[in-house]
Image 1 (cartoon, rainbow, N blue to C red):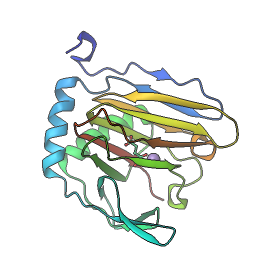
Image 2: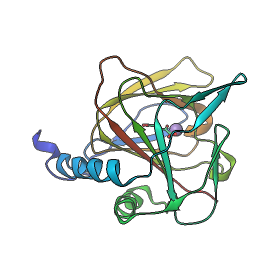
Image 3: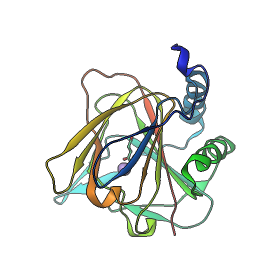
Length: 202
Ligand SMILES: O=C(O)CCC(=O)C(=O)O
Ligand SMILES: [Mn+2]
């Protein structure tokens, strides 16, 4: 374990990218706490595998997902409508810590379980209408490190960052209007990763 991740830390790295407001907190949760959260979330989450339809053909999504929240509002993304289950105490604990640095109250969290390097999420923006104009998206990672890619919608600019166990990536302001992101497949990875994106549905 490295010295700097033995305690929670609000060390913050602001990404120097135009038309964006993205901050990375590498050790938001200590490695120990992150590994505990990973175990609990892996077993207590009701994971599901939805199907996606691309050009008229249906495929299983290349990862498992779950939606938890504090209200009955459903959430639709990529043509999939999900109804949140009530927040667990684990999710509420993570949420309240993240709300402090986000200066936002979140009411829903989308969880992704990447079972191995062949699981992924394709290029997209988190720009669903329900999220409002300039949504704050707080993305927490537990387990295997995976690369997170960003690309600008108009300029030829892209960026890659490795999302560490226990890290927080906070996307704010106009980021979703100008940038897309993805977690690409990777042949090198055979460990699981859990990602949580906290959002606010209006
Ligand atoms: O797994 C990640 O880091 C990203 C997940 C994501 O972009 C999403 O769920 O919208
Ligand atoms: Mn996303």
